Length: 147
Image (cartoon, rainbow, N blue to C red; front, top):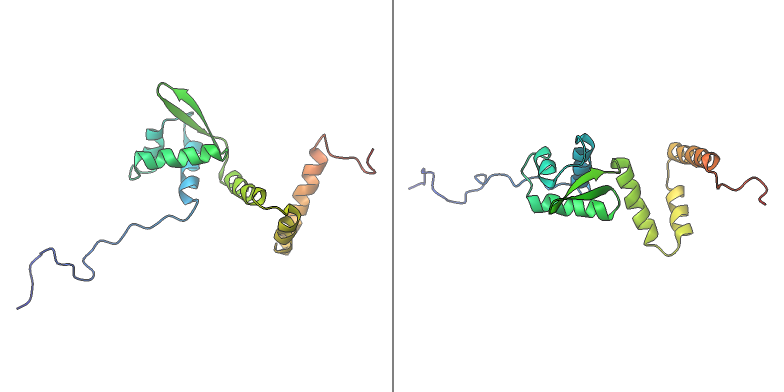
């Protein structure tokens, strides 16, 4: 006798697929995207709804708090809670992550040297251009020949 009913048997293929797990940083980037689209400082519930409403309120608060600790968002009191504003975009968030890794290492010169030698020729050229532009635009940049 075979089971042809719709019972609660655990036959293979009958379970709904597990939700896709987000990549590290993906949720932070989505929250920053929400804040970038916001009309101004917004409460957690606004961010939660912008993300589709499927995340728990506490999860959104946790992500916002982590972004705040990284300096990627600002918050201000609004009654008993906060409203949030993005201060970094996705590139800024990636730069903050890179800075955190660099700050955790004792030999900054070795880390930077390893990073630069692993760059593609195009990325190395771009980095040199950016460093040149930054050096020219900084009022505290040392002059040729020093003082």
